[in-house]
Structures are given as structure tokens and as C-alpha cells.
Length: 419
Image (cartoon, rainbow, N blue to C red; front, top):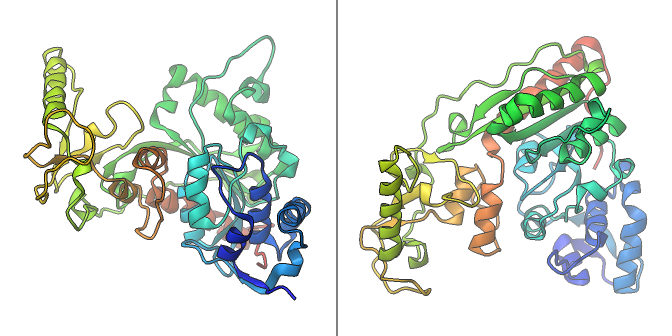
């Protein structure tokens, strides 16, 4: 008789969970089923999960699974979930950590980047489904709250298309079609601050029209929320859009107030000396200075910026001067021998880039969040992530609103599911 599998790590070893190699959705079906094997959501994943497992192991999945199966991962689902949510454009799971901290259970996740999927699986024991544009909305489980940090895109209005159809061809359209099909009780969307003025405000206006008129949700005016007001030392402004299904009887919503707690780079700075690879070469240091001088003469504020220990970091972003806008001075380095090919030598002024772990902390990721990708990918992943504390504070207010109205109006509120 085969030994029963009691831990997720044993399943990973059995089927070789590798998001970088897998080109199908097989691992997504399997891991989603494992997370939902004891609830009604399992029906969305069971057939494909069993078929895949048996094709690899040549034995039925149920023959191996122990009734005491557990996830030995950094961020398991809460034992007694209070509500369900889905995680679209999931990245590395910033939304998921916030929602799980509040008692939520994720029943579906989607992310297109394979390296982000690797980090997501490592921390949550779940491989997100891929390209959301190719996923049928009917194949997504019912859920209480839809979460999505979606990209900002313009809408091409052609012919006589109006309302909902105006957004076709954008990733917001995929959010809208899921909302239309599944009718969750609420949604929480995050985007760049520039969405407010994108195409002279037409993009946001179209989004709100679809959400309010076509999909019939109560949507309070969006709010610009700054991460630095919620416990992380990063000046990161993002637009938050929340909405409630009309039968939830929500008629007002106040976004959370700043915590008032001041935090600085010193609060998230590496405790030990940082490897030399993060230190800037003398030649690149000179290039940065000249670049800034040229723009200064033109009256521009472009260029590198040094963040002191008692200051707040600039927004971390992917590409451009993302890392150079957050240079720090750290004079703890003692061995200046380069470990990579550089022009010149390692600077002696202590100039260095922030590490991926420091970027993770700037977004509110706890230190037990595992990072096992290259620095290039890690910077990209955390630069694209949401700021967890700001998300969690807003989500807490959203959830309380639903629960309070459930009690007040006796409406069908959040789902308390057995897992």
C-alpha cells in the first residue's frame, strides 16, 4: 500500500511542480483543487486535477491524499475563513496576504508572468492560472470579493459600441465580464495614480460608468491612497476603487484614515552588511551625477536621488530610474572586490541600490516571504506589487461594511465556508 501524502511539499516532489517548465494549466488545477478539496469549490478543479496527477504518477490522486493533508508553506489559508475572494493579476500575492490576514480564503488566482507564478507558488502553495483573457468567466468559482491590481490601458471606442463593450480589448474588460457573470458582493481594484487623468479622465470615467451603470454596483468616488500613510516608508500613491452589489445596501463608504505612524528607511534597512554587488561603480556614479546635472540645467528634477536613513523612499517602479531614485548610503562594506564585471571600481562613498528584500519591506511583505528568483525578477515583482498595509486597511473597511449591513438588513452577506 502506498504511503499517504500528508504535506504539500510531498505533492510538489511527486509531480515536480515547476512553473517555469509547465506550459499548461495542469499545475494550477491541481494546486487549486488541493486548496479547496473539502468545499464546494473543488468541483471547478477536481476532474482536471485527478487526470493530471494520474497521468504523472499512474495512480489515483485520492489514493495518495491523507485526510490530514496540510500545506507546509509560509502563508497558508486561515483555518476558519470568514469570506472568499479571487486574486486577479495576482503578481506575487500582495492582495492575497492582505486578504488572508483579514480572514479570507482565495478560491481562484490568475497571473501571466511565469516568474511571478514561481514566487506565488513558493509562498502560497498555489500555481495561479495564466492569461486571464483566455479563461472563461463561467469556470471561475463564486466568491465574495474580487480583487485586482490591473494595468492602466486606454479604450479604443469604435463604431457604435457603448458602455460595457467600450472596454473590450482591455484587461478591465476581463474584470467586468467576471463581475457580470459571478456578481460578487464587492470588488477592490487598484491602479496607478495616473489613471485619474489618463486620456484626460476619459478612461476612469468609462470604468466608473461600466461599474455603476452597466454592472449596477454602488461605487463611491475612487481615492488616491499613499502607502507611506499606512506604515511603510515609501511615497507610493495609487488609486483605489471599491464597489458593492446593490443588495448589500451599502450607500456610503469612507476610505481609511492615515495611521499617523511615521516610518523611515532605517525601519526597513538590512540589519547586516550588504553584498558588494549592490554597490555602484565609480564610473556609473559619475554617469548618474552628469545625468542629473544636465537635467538640472534644463530646469528638470530628473535623476538619481539619495534616500537618507531618516527619510521616506520614492515609489519603487520597474524600469527607467526606478532603482536610481532610491539610492542609499551604507558604509558598512569592507571588501570592495567586485563580484561582477564593472567599469571602474566600487565607489567608496557607500552608494548602493536597495536590496530586493528592502523593496519587499517597502511594500509591506513580511520577512518570511520567500524570494528565490534572480534580483532582476525580484525587483520587477516587488516594483509591480501592491503596498500590502494600504490594501489591508482599505479591505478591512470594505469587509466591515458588508458584515455590518448583513446584520442590519439581514441580507445574504459573506460566505462562511468550511475548509
